[in-house]
Amino acid sequence: MEQRTRSPYPRIDRPVLAAVGILLVISTALFMWKQRNHDWRYYQYRFAQMVGEQFGADKVATVPAGIQQIWVSGLRRADRCTTCHQAVSWKGFEQAEHPYRTHPEGPLKTHPIEKFGCTSCHGGQGWAIDTEDAHGQVAHWEEPLLSRTLGEEYTLATSKTALMQMNCNTCHRYDRETAGAEAINLAKRLVQEKGCRACHVINNRGGTIGPDLTLVGEKAPEQYDFSRLFGQRTAFAWHVAHFKDPRALVTDTVMPNFHLSTEQAQALSMLVLSWRRAEVPAEYVSGAPRGDPQTPEERKAEEDMRTGPGGWFVQTGCFVCHSISVFNVKSPAQIGPDLSTAVDDVQKRFGVTLDAFLANPTGTMSVVLSRQIILTPAQKEIAIQKLREAFAEYQRQQAAGGAVAGAVH
Picture (cartoon, rainbow, N blue to C red):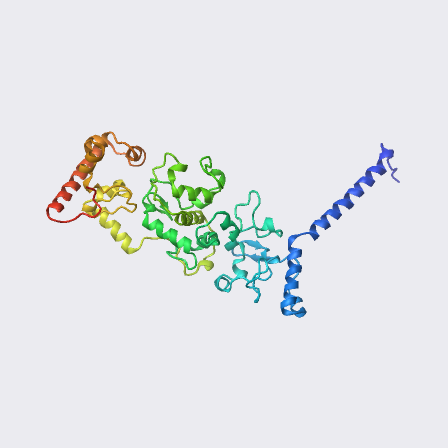
């Protein structure tokens, strides 16, 4: 028989073992106490009371107990939201406070919870079972609950629940208009009206003067420069401030100030933050557009400008900011003066000839011609020739009694 080795510390063995045993008992008790104090236990207890008060004891027996989970294999999401929000599909709690309120019926008809889960639309941390964690108000979690509370914190100009439309547009980004997404629809109209694609690539088409915005929603908060931003330092707050006054945040930007309202700036911020990759199976977006191509009318209008007498201005990118109305070239942004009268306008505004101004530009044009549209000396000569041709056509139309829309006198 093997002889047992004696402990080198016989006097402290028993105290150490006793201490370890006590620690195990304490840790077990703490674990059990913590498990008993999860938020969901109280919410389930209270909801069962409410069901009993309204429908009787028989109905209480049908209320599920314990942690509930919805596994959405198509989206690879595990949502435990219904652990607390048990009234989602119950009738009769439409006016109750959260988390005891019935979910509006309309969205669930097209987005059944079994197929879409909760967080794909609402945001939040689906597998959490305590309120703060589940609502995503924790460090390093970038998908907070897009709730009314968050909308109130951002003082949204319209519906305080509009932030959820960002997740709607993750799937519906190529829709020209999405039912129920008024803020996103407004932003999409503004993208067309303000000519954002003249400078930015959006959905894989557009200009290259500004950064590609196709996936700008994936930009991490750590990549933003918040040094010139006052108040909340979040990606959403940054975009709102940038849309309202670009140079207040980026001093050397050539992006113009469109003098947007707060509602418009917030809507555009929601839209750009929704532009991110989304691995959504085709069955989830059945019938929805799978791309954002130009309409036949848009293609024809662009081709007419590119091949017409003002085609040079289109090819070089001058039309991004400037219309040349005598040649039927319409700027998508329309933030600079009409170049039909540039020969005369430069002399009046800057006191120099067109030739001298292009040789030594000032103001915004000095930035544009040094960073965005870089012309060689030979190309500048062509520019002067084209601008003189435009002014000659302007004078001819004026002599013939025609008005040139948008031309600066």
